[in-house]
Structure formats: structure tokens, C-alpha cells
Image (cartoon, rainbow, N blue to C red; front, side, top):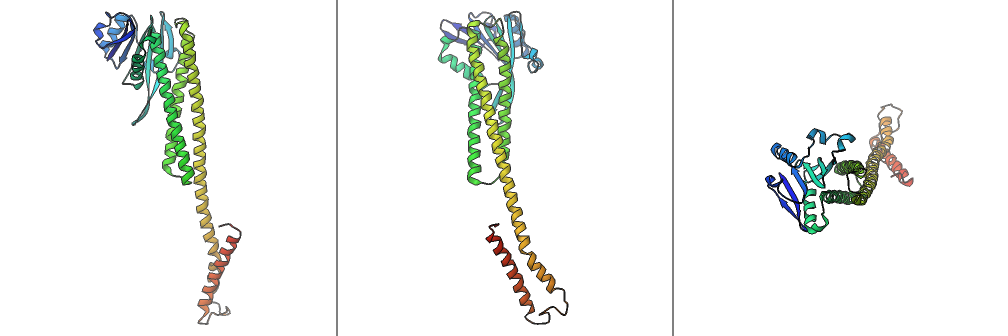
Length: 314
């Protein structure tokens, strides 16, 4: 699918017929979403550009993430998609050529849909492909910020659960681990965008009057990175609290078994003595001997229990 956006007067209009690409005037943005080989070739021929292969787009080397060629800016960045099915990263390729933005991606993305909605609200702010690129990046960063705020709320909920219940549950540890993984992915994609945008900021082909806007976006990314660090620290604290509760529960169990063992040691000793069957043991041949030994065992347990309570060990 190929979406073509062009400026007509003060309005931004959209064309879905790729055959109109060479005819429209005021072209500002061409969005390729999972295009066919024919669509990709058509755009390359009509606009004198060249898209990278999917393998080149996902490369992590700096030379693959950002480069300039024939007055054209090429940049690749990873976006994070979070939904009910989980989370995953997907690459997005940007090409800025003669103030026309070309984007190449696989699959649908809410970020692009939200960008189009913002454009419809204030189309007069879009003067060219550079403005579309900045708007797209701003929308992506806002989505990442919303995700971090959602993670922060989840962290607060887990903290309240641990405070109220005061007991460790396996699902809590799973939730903490999942939030750590999402936060790590958000941090990774933010660093990726920061690296790419820093390269664009140094580009001689990027308009000077838009670089200040780009610097503001970079500051926003820096704020996101600080936020992720804060969330990491909170998650680490929760994890330590969780492990502390587990250790406390284990200590309570061990304490109970220890107390029970010590309480039954004197009765066991008494039972062992009376079970030796030596003739000189008092009350061995008396009918009340059994009851005396039983009474001694009960009293010894009560004495030990009373001593523990007095020392406030239980």
C-alpha cells in the first residue's frame, strides 16, 4: 500500500492511486506500507530515489542507520509496538529528498495514523517533507512517553499490592520482569532514535531553520531516557522488596519448624529415658508410671513454650 500526500493551497490532500505519483503537484510525503515489488520500483523510478533492502534497514551499524547520498538523507530507526498481544520492535526507513519525505515500513502502525490525524487538525504547519518527518517523530516520542507513564502506573499498582498484602506471589515477579523488559525495549529504541537524529542534526542537507525543532525533539528523547532510568530503579526496588518478602516468608517457616523441633526435644528425651526398661527407673513397674511420664512430657513442652514467649521469640 502506498499513500501519497501533497499540498494544495493551505490543505494537505491524500492520494492512494500510485499511478498519480508523477502527476500530483506539491508532493510532501509518500508512505509505503508493506509495498509490493512493483509499487516500490514505481516510486523509485518516479522520484529518483533508492530504498534499502529489508536486511540493510535492520543493520545496527552507524553507516546503515544514517547516511547521506546525492543530497538525500537516509535514516533507519526502530519503533516499539505495544498492544494486547505483547510488544515488538519494527524498523522504519526515512528518506528525505528535495523536501519530500519517503517512509518505508512493514505492517500497520498507530504512530503513522496519529500523525495523519494531527496533520488534518493543523495542515498549515506542514510546508514540506521535513515538517512531516518532525511531526512523525514527535508523535512517536509522545507514544513512547504514554507507554512509560502506563508502566509507571503499573509499578505503583504493584507497589500497593505488595504493601497491602505483605506477601510474595509468583505472578507479581512475572509482572515485574515483564515491565523491566518493556522498559528496556523503550530505552533501546529511544537511544536508537537519539543516535539517528544526532546524525541528521549534523547533516548539511537538513534545513537550518528546522534544526532548532530537531534539538527540542532530542531533548524530549533525553527526558524519556531519564524517565526509563527512574522506572528501572523503581522496578529494581520492587524486585528487591519482593525477594525480601520471600526471604521473610522462608524465615518464618524455618522459625516455626525450629520452635516445633525444640519444643518436642524434652518430651522426646523423657520418652527415651522411660523407654529404656531398666529396673531401677522409678515408676517403671507402677500402674501410674505411664501417666507420670506423659505428664512430664507435657510439662516440659509447656516450659519451653513459656520460655520462648517470655523471650518474645515467638
